[in-house]
Image (cartoon, rainbow, N blue to C red; front, side, top):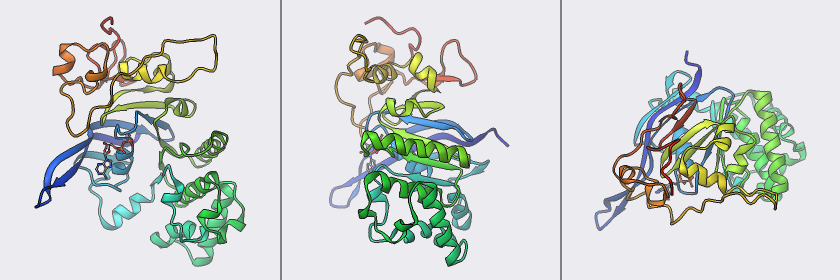
Length: 331
Ligand code: ADP
């Protein structure tokens, strides 16, 4: 068995845009353009990049909320994307997702009891009494009292609602939890409480997290490794320390330089990213970042750089997709 829990190979997701009288496909949103990576059991893998770079699409395609266009996902040694029927149901128990807006992801017309017992209903696990006992235990685990059982999502604060979302996600004791900006909509003071809860649960249950955030500062403290995405591609992927200490891709460098430093003496060299992200309908030629890269050369406009070992590294410890990584042309 591989040391990896999940292996993703060349995953592509294009959303068709239909138009005209016949509603034929007139264009495509190139949301994921051949993404490959491996996930280790028990790690937290941070996935960062500006809004629209394909992070949510990656999460939703991995968990099969959205169909993939092409590519492979191996989960626990098996072809996850080929699974159907009962096999798929069983595999789905092992992979859950937490969403940014718990209000949207929870059925607002259901009581917390219904919300938390539903996963057991769907999978036909336990008696009615057992399901209720497990739901109560899950509430306790996320720091809420049993009194919450009869209440509705709107009766809770944002942080409490996210705790309910987490309780639901862990109900079936999954191996992997895909966390799509789970604290972005919460007040800063509540963010750290929810993050701490997630870290405690990870330790206790041996969970593997794929943690999506648009903000590098959020993933900084919790990630073992960090993947940086730009326009549906991975541009850099390494351990959390290296990504902050020696980022090699000009895009990662710009993201890191934008993290505020709480020290007025320390000015830092902030790199301003020029222009908007190009449309994923018409991707730029060559390196998709070249239109905003201050180091771009002719080669960057013509050839797409592969994601490969950074100069001086081997064994996929630090991957980067830049023709000039480690030797950026002067600006
Ligand atoms: P992120 O999570 O990084 O903000 P998304 O994965 O949500 O990015 O979006 C990537 C691209 O795919 C965006 O251009 C977005 O508009 C587009 N997109 C996302 N979901 C859909 C959909 N259901 N139909 C069409 N386009 C979509």
